Length: 284
Image (cartoon, rainbow, N blue to C red; front, side, top):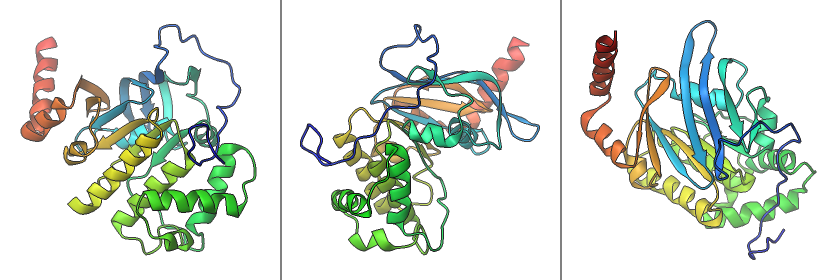
């Protein structure tokens, strides 16, 4: 379980062997490319033409008001069957994964940290991780292999070893749930991590602990790309993004560096909504 760099860990294979898409227009560094993505729930269109490119090792923050479609984007990226893609493509590692089921996306190295992780009674954290890691590695891992890797990461993330035997998220505080998600991200070694409002419900101290965990994982795996969904700038003060995107009414309407987050924090989202509405009226 030793890597060539001397660190311990488990090797994960590449994604399923499906036909490559024509990706000549993509940079060799591009990990995720979303083009003209439209999606709906039951009947209502929620995503209205999302365009986004994320390079290997980059951190992208997506900010926007409640109800703008940010969480829907996350669910569509993970292949949630409750949503239907009506137009556009999702290309990951040069492959069109728009129609892939959720489990194939996870095996290919896409990870999602949930906004409100669900508690599952009777399932210890280590059991969940063993099943998830075995699926990711495409071989049956022993409890011992998983425990050794888990203990090492829990030490690096400053987590109590007894955490491994607790039932998944049962009786966990908000901070513990989020730290458990970060532990899963560390253990599964994804190439793309999508963090859906990981800062939600955390006090300042818990936020710093979670942010430190993200940075610890990226120190170990600098090519890990992160898409961070958030309402607020505060987590971006701990985890500095390469790019910040403003998401309103089902699409990205503005992109810039970290300074955009500071501007949004100062001006709020309503002024942007009003400006966009004015542009729309003028264009009409």
